[in-house]
Image 1: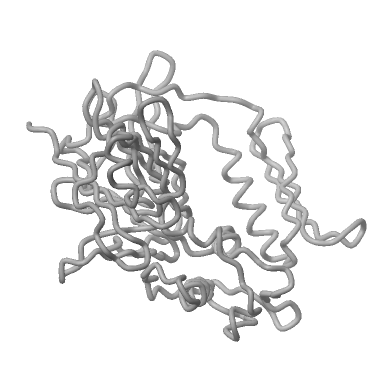
Image 2 (image 1 turned 45 degrees about the horizontal axis):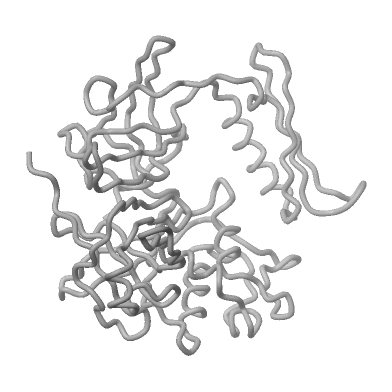
Length: 368
């Protein structure tokens, strides 16, 4: 099988001008993540960078990765650092831009405050506000997904106070932090008109779906069996969740179960959570996570094996995973929370998949 064909594209962030349709990057590693921007690292020869300084203009250039004609990743260039005889580049997906944007008007310029609001709508409002200001439009579209989650109450509305200069990226992170909140990831693809689409995918009750058509297995498409660590340091069957307030007025909820094991407690500090119901849900989710003993956190897989080729699974999907080594055998549903691809090197193209235990609840249809 011939190696995949990669092409890297550089585009001016404001004008949309394609600065280079075949940027000569090397040592490239890229990938998305769940509820985060994802990242790209690469190197560029100083000779090319000196002849075309516009392609490495940090904070003003968009970088794209195309694999066999399919756009796999896109983001904003943040760092261009000279190192010996190369220029090291670091880029991050669309969500990273909101970490450098603030609400300078208050209430997202009249869109808030929010009472019993769908967090998906608030996320769309945040992006609409950020891109409404002069020179702030990245051309990012946000999915029209709706959710049953709610934020803000009549007693405690969700507010954006201009005098606090709230970071818009932090606000989005808060909206997806709770167990019953929607998910997001950053996406890039070719549109039907041949133009590049920059997208934030929203999913509720989650992104992705449970996949029965792909799998990760030792001896099949997993390159080497990773260790399966087991430690009581992270185990807990009792969670003491603390929320907003001070002293005796601090909100608190204890979620504890008897599971035939020695009682192990841990404190989950959530100083910004004011609702007792939200505190209870977060505590239960943390307890379930910490009760799991022994897991596979990442695997390296063959990039184009028929069992799960690149592009057949997405961030958020559950994939049945079997790992066998001299110490343990593991089999179970694991959720893909991120992945990264190294496009070349002595071993050729390699793929690392980041995993966490899948949680059992209603699964929506696969994302488009």
